[in-house]
Length: 449
Image (cartoon, rainbow, N blue to C red; front, side, top):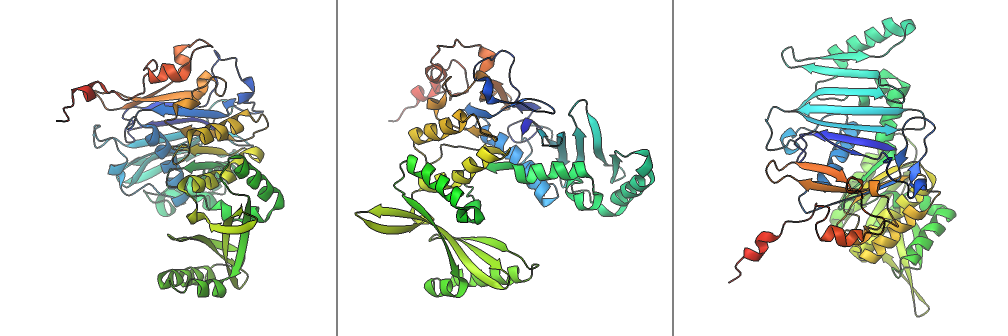
């Protein structure tokens, strides 16, 4: 579970700024919104972030996405200047730190980078008091990295040898130590890595879920739950079909698009060089989205289609033939299923993108009201209709506001205002009571003539 995100010098976050999922002692409503942890900190299940356009909501999600991307790629981004705050000293590094809990432990992991160099990287266990797992620092004068790594006396010699190898030969200045888990072979490093790469899910407006093509749609229970969710959202879809087709047959049917056939052949060549087993690569075009799968020495094209019943007739639609809003819902279907059964964290930028406000409210209310929900949902939105004390606690509602002088974003929660229980939160927000709305006074001075 995500506990906190701290970032500085990242885009609109010029100064160190913290977002956290820690419950406030002042809030007594919806106590079941708090995940009780056997170890470590208690955290909230949901959070919603409001703010004007350009206030920094998306930048917060991008910071988390950037950290995950660095861990997956194993290195800091080459274009540092695109991340750094434009108004700070150009030599100031970007810093992103996240604290989170797994089933086994609680960690604080952070990266500080400048140019194409990882200036600092650290991983601490924070379940009681901070205990260093590793800490590395780059010396600009010697151009060398110094590493501190926890070990017991029994393995001290082996640990010193590993550190020496990492410093001198294995770890480059732009690479992350966390991503060298196969070399280090430390259970805590592996535990932290797996949470950041598999349990943390960052969804941007342009992100399309690939998990709808995996084996879950061949599972009758998952398929039934997905169909039930989609039907309750009144999308006009009655059923979902999972179709696997021999790759040669599929290529014959799309013969009018030779460029797609060439791309499929390229994917097959790539898959053929991988170890035997089941692998898949997503192919997305303007006509369809398909998963090219290898099973043993055979290849298949897999599609999920939406089935409509109209006047007792069946019609199958490609996902790309559905509306943008319907496609967006398909991105969220695996998320809802995952959150019900796993302690995964989903962070979504613009959850209301292409979706009707009524549908968004129904979807969010369904997730939030489920007392058995195991996952965690954090999202940004402009939909003021979700500002409802019946849905969220005051400490689950966050605001992002940009300082007009420094152009730096700061964050705060509704709990800081101590609003009355009967206050109309939506009306109060739109009237500027909590800030974080566009400043439109100069619009009246605009001469259209």
